Structure formats: structure tokens, C-alpha cells
Amino acid sequence: MAKSPHLSRNEFVKIVVGAVGTLIGSVIAFPAVGYIVSPALAALRGGGKDTWIPVGPLENYPLGVPTLFSFTRTKINGWEKTTNSYGVYIYRKNETETVAFSNICTHLSCRVNWNEERQQYLCPCHNAQFTVDGLVAGGPPPRPMDQYLTKVEDGTLFINFVEG
Image (cartoon, rainbow, N blue to C red; front, top):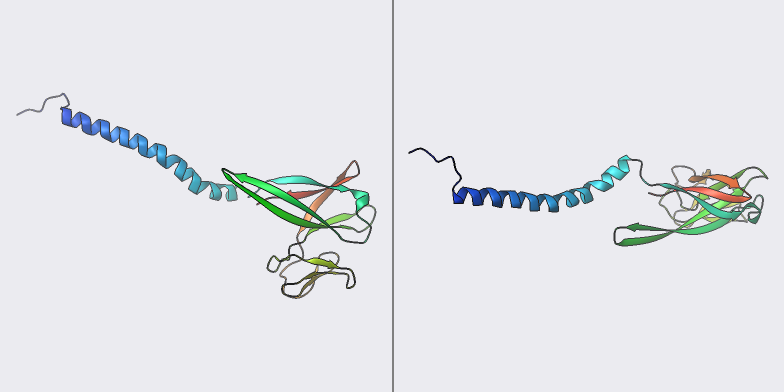
């Protein structure tokens, strides 16, 4: 017996249910795949974005004395809002040269403090010591203190903060 060229009711229902199921599955799967893959794609694109943060008038920072400047950054990722605080030591070497160091130790990310008496940055966690120029003076740090790019515009000092 030859098969009819027309679809039976049973075959039509199977095709429609399969098409609707595929459509619903892809509507659910595409955002889920994007959510899972997006952090990896952001890392491949170079991580975070950079921002020039004003840290105040240049004359607020005395010559030869590292001065702590604290700031917060808020990041919104969908419905999640995260606020982080950061610290930067501004060190004016002379009238024309200013450097900015992160106050995070390069050993285990503890916060370093400037010790005026010893003329060093000291980390309280594992006795890390850094010179006024951010170089390792003692202890376990694997590298010098992290440094931010700086610029001065109209008498205001800015640091280039890179998120991520």
C-alpha cells in the first residue's frame, strides 16, 4: 500500500510539537549560554575598563611625603551592586614628577601603611617592606608595589585606574 503524500494528523502534531519545543529551548538556552560565556569573553578582551580618577589639586600633596588618598568604585552587574574601596599613595618626588602606588601589598594583598619614622611602606601581614619609590626593601613580596599612571590637568592630579 502506497503512502499518501499528505501528512497524517499524528505526524503534523509531532512536527509542530518539535518546532515549538526547539523554539522554547533556544529562547531559554541563548541567554544562559551568554551568561556563562561572557566572563571569559571579557577576560579575552583585556579585562576591565580604565578610568581617570581625580585625586585633587596637586598642591594638596606635599613634596617628599607619601600621602594616602582613598576612593570607592561601584560596579553594577545586572541586579548585583558591588562597592569596593581603594587606596593610593601619592608621592611627589619633586615639582614635576608625581607617582601613585597602590596600597595593596604584592605578596598577599594586605594593605600597606607609610611609616614616617622608617621611611618605608610596611605591610602588617608578613613584614613586607617597600622603599619610598615602591621597590621591595625586605620580606616576601615577589615584585615592587603596583603603580598607577598619573597626569595633571589644570592643577588637578588624576590617576588611571583600571578595573578588573
